[in-house]
Image 1 (cartoon, rainbow, N blue to C red):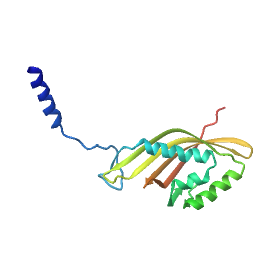
Image 2: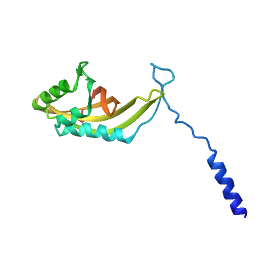
Image 3: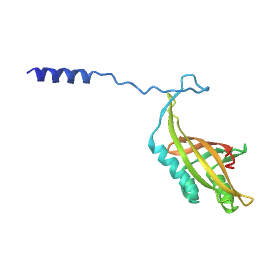
Length: 164
């Protein structure tokens, strides 16, 4: 009988435990109440599919992952707007002989609270041939995802140190 009373007490206590909403961390200057929580691994898979499509020169897959009004801010300060403009820029790059290759080394999806905006930040090395020499840069991409598509990407870059 004591076992049943103990079991009943545990059952009652577990049913009344409060459910807490996820508490975010960090800050954003645009909204003092905005914090961030870890996002879904589905976003990581989407990001990896996007990068793999770049490595495979699969322009159609790249475009299928982009919103019609995608905006891409590239390291030189210029901006690419729209999937067609992005495809045109990539095709020119791929055909230039630079043979760019991306190697992802970290990815972190995150979601704003309370805005629920989904973002993903990732780092990778980019190796390409420039003037006959293999050059590697390190890039970070911060990308907004809306309705399952990349909406805005900001690409930051730094030269890798010489390995000599």
